[in-house]
Length: 384
Image (cartoon, rainbow, N blue to C red; front, side, top):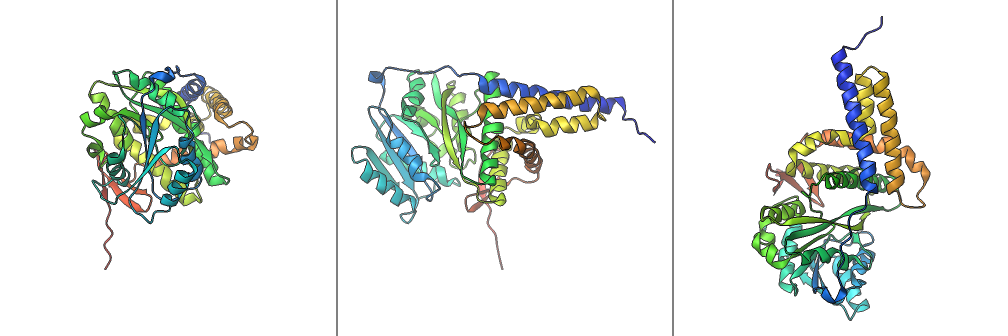
């Protein structure tokens, strides 16, 4: 006996497939679109302090930090920060100081905590060594090209600009888990940012790069104002926008090292990202299911009982997803990576569902509870 799906269910399934198809096409177009470049004369380049909070000797940390020392920029300093003199990152910084004796490279070793965020506490402690009024904050696992500073700092010469940030691409180590982690960044996170930017939104800021003037930072209360925030980068941008200042998305795309050694690390990392987004953009996070392409279109086709329009939309979604992958993949990467697309999208969709289960996250070796305002409180385990 054949069971006929009710028309309302077929309509809902077809609509779901249509939303997934529409987003997938838009995402492909968004990553192909060029951002307007920002340039200025070298003579106008203001001196810059780069702030690099560190914790541990991550994979490729020397290569990443070295890329900042090689900047084609007339005058800048780099301030590194650690909370412990035994941190292995200290040896990396000392090596850079020996390799680049002509660069202004400083290190702050200070374990004082100013809130629940170790990274922001580090930044607060580092500010005592910052010499210049133009600041660039960047995570430790970021690798850049020689023209990075000149391009990132340029928009800050406009007094209406609060912060400058940029997209990033995942640079994967060998292995399946690192590959999946880089695909999460390159083929889901970054396209979603580019779609939002194409629609006119600038409600974002990313830890890979944030450039800000010192007096603007002071006007929002300094780093102390975000000392308890999980999404400290997002809140920094939000506070400047509340002052009526603009956020600029630079055309620069930096690389971040993706080193996921096992499935557990991959899941914890991505769940922290998703729960961070949930904390700062709850409505947007709830509606972002349409960004998961193939599994959402497949679910829509299933609900529509295999109706021809829904199946056609599933096929178009899959084609758009392949075109997106072809656009963002690194030249020379293996075509068999195409086989991972449905796996990656299905995993992302499952993690999105899982992100609603709890507000707990793991950040390095610490566990935190995320509150509704995006701040975090350490989770203390009591054993008897």
